[in-house]
Amino acid sequence: MKIKYELIKNDGGARLGKLRTNYGTYDTPMFMPVGTLANVKMLTPEELKAVNSAVILSNTYHLWLRPGEDIVAKAGGLHKFMNYDGPILTDSGGFQVFSLAKNKNKDITEEGVHFKSHIDGKPLFLTPELSIQIQNKLDSDIAMSFDECIPYPATYEYTKESTERTLRWAKRGKDVFNNEKQSLFGIVQGGAFEDLRKFSAVETVKMDFDGYSIGGTSVGEDKETMYNMIDWAIKYLPEDKPRYLMGVGDPVDLFEGVLRGVDMFDCVLPTRIARHSNAFTSHGKINLRNLKYREDFTPIEESCDCYTCKHYTKAYLRHLFVASEGLGGRLLSIHNIRFLIRIMENIRKAIEEDRFLEYKDEFLKEYLD
Image 1 (tube, one colour):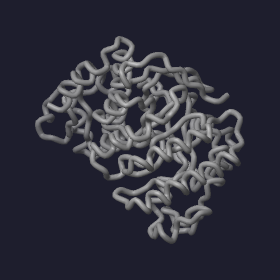
Image 2 (tube, rainbow, N blue to C red; image 1 turned 120 degrees about the vertical axis):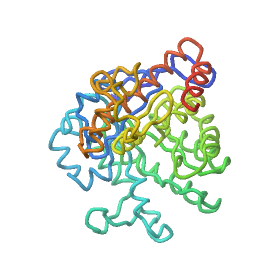
Image 3 (cartoon, one colour; image 1 turned 30 degrees about the horizontal axis):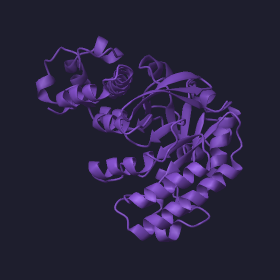
Image 4 (tube, one colour; image 1 turned 180 degrees about the vertical axis):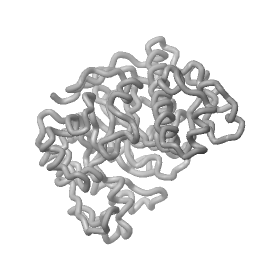
C-alpha cells in the first residue's frame, strides 16, 4: 500500500503524527538511520530494531552500481535482500551523482546527468526515468524524485534554472513510476532564495506526491540560512502528508526542524562520527580517545538505555579505539543512533503534553553549555 500520514496534534509548529507503512505504523517526528549500501554501517537489522529504528535509508546510486537493481529484485526486493522487516526509503542518487559531475554546466543536461563511476571511472548517465525505474525494482517503501542538489553558494540565475529543471524531472519521474506498493516523494529545491523556494514548493505540491522533502540543505550554508530555507518552503506543503528534511541529524537541527513542522529526518552523522570515536551525550559530543577516559569506568551516558551503555564503559571503548579494534565503532554507532532516536521519542512526548518549547530549551541548555 501507499504510506498514509495522520496528523495527531500540533504544539505550535511542531507536529505529532503517525506514518502508516507496509511494515507497521510509526510515530513522527522520527529520525531515520542511513544504510547507504543496504546496511547501516557495521550494524545488523536486529541491532537497528533494538534501538527502536523505524524507516531506514538506502542509496539508489550505490545499489545501482553494486550489486545492481536486478540482483536485488531477484532476491525479492530490498527488504528480503538485507533482511530488514521495517520500512525503507531509497533516495534518488541525485546527491552522489552531482558530487561526481565535475563540470556542471556540461555534465548536467535536460535529459539527465553524465558522470563517472566512483568505483572504476566508467562513464555513466542517469536520468529521472532511470532513477525511478531502479527504485521501483529495489522495491523500497518510499522512493524519491530525481533532483539536482544545488550547491551553496549559487547565483540566482543558476538556482532558478536548476529549480525549474528539477520540476520537469519530477514530472518525468512521476510519469514512469510503476510500483503500487511504493510511495513517491517530491523534493523542494530553490536554494537560498525565498521566491524560488516558494515557487518550487507550490509547483511540486501541484503534482500530488505521497510526501514532500525539503532538499538542498546542509550543503555548506550557515545555520540561519538553512532554517530560512525550511521556513520558506514548509508553509506551502500540505498538512496531511509527511514532510522530510533531507540530510539533517545534528541534535540542534532536529529541534529546529521539528519547531518548523518537519516530520522526518535522516543523516549519516551518528555512524560517521562513531567511527572516529565521537559520542553524543546530553552535554554535547565527546571524543573517547581523550586520555581522561582511560580510567573512566562509567557508561557514555547513565540515563541511556542502549546496549552499549548497559554493558560497556568509556574506558573500554577508549581502549578499543586506541587499539584500532572495529568493535569500538560498532558499539558507538549503536549508542549514537539510539541517542538521536531517544531525542525524537522525548520530542513526541513533549508535543503530546504541549511542552515542546520547554523541552527544547531544557535540552539545548544542557547540550550546548
